Image 1 (cartoon, one colour):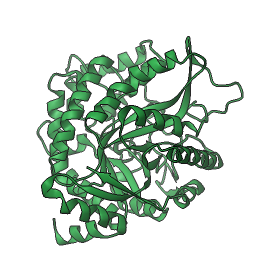
Image 2 (cartoon, helix red, strand yellow; image 1 turned 180 degrees about the vertical axis):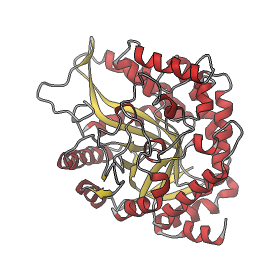
Image 3 (spheres, one colour; image 1 turned 135 degrees about the vertical axis):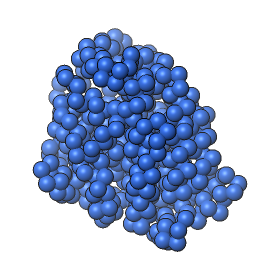
Length: 438
């Protein structure tokens, strides 16, 4: 590590604690870390960086009849504007920034490594530490390299081997600067969506067939397609192996995974609610219990389940622009369940609302934090909270219409404007520290 990098890494209270504690224990491969209660905002590389031309989703956006309402294009141009954006995030009073590093940039072709991309992500991490932000890194946030998906994605027999080599490379290249990390983002999402809509999506099938043809491949892998049970088994195996690979690299930091969840509430007999939880979440929660320092909970609303399946929200409910019930109190229930099954500390790695009305976002944040604090008061071991998202960004198939950011982004000029909700969240930051035993 250069002198400049070391000075940056040790600057700031939170970053200094992380560096001093973990480096002192590096040789023993175990550590007692003292970190602040993580209070931040989250993004994902594909949704913000722009021009991710080597990613699978970039191709899918361009297929005739695609399920994507818009193309991501330059997105928020975060890849070139990251420095000023990190400075902006730090100015809001937050102490952590969650973002993903993009496999398709680091390894654009199988075995071909982009040293420019590695240097780029190292500098992002350096800038975080320079501004006293603990970086929470996601190794895989939905988007995969085009070449990986063209080979069948997670249904290919060698998928895990490719992913593990990437994890080893990324960890070796900048693990010394990571504060916390998740191997996967929402690997259960496919099963969660299938539970709500089990019928085949013909439009998606046509899009994937076109993508396979354009790649001269018999099948095109995609994180929301294929044999969900087979893919889950492959990804759980990869996660357990990746945990060991990453932990063997430089740096010592809490490592886990994040799950897409709803606050599942039973209407009457809880049998169907409990069956849903078991089928969607439990395999991953048990994997995290086996190997994991925390479980990341990503929750936006609740789901009501009765004896015959899903129950509609109450008639007087209000809804977000995503079509989800406005229910900030979802945080408490989801955290309780994740903690009870995984027996691991919880970090709320995503929570937020899609709305054009920032006063509604402020109301959501206040009530969500109240829900968070109730769970903590009841003894749930929660160690952080990240709002989704830091910036208004590309929301996958929904395009740019849903505005989920604490910071508005002008789609023409890329100008950033912090919303009042951003300052509200920063002013609510807890002033306490948490001890981690790794």
